[in-house]
Length: 92
Image 1 (tube, rainbow, N blue to C red):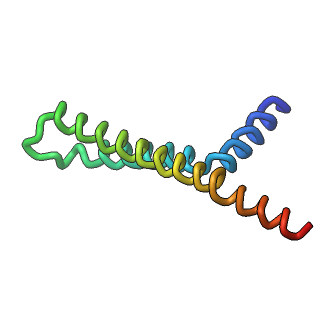
Image 2: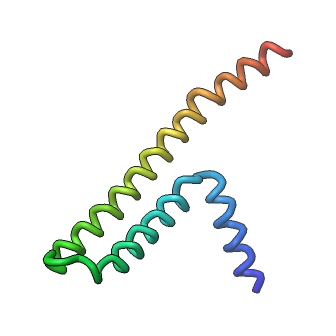
């Protein structure tokens, strides 16, 4: 049971460091679930075309979440940290 708790805390620690990874995963599963439920009412669309659209939508969401994560990390590392360091130097 202790291994499970360590893995759980590791997941939450990693999620706090990179908050867009769980968002990307949740969005991926939400899109896939929605499109699978919508498969009943796809009309004349072939199954392969429907699955390709589902894959493209899910991948697009994940790539968008990863891009936002990279932009957020760059903002945090190259804009916020230097400003905090400058303020710390000024107050000394």
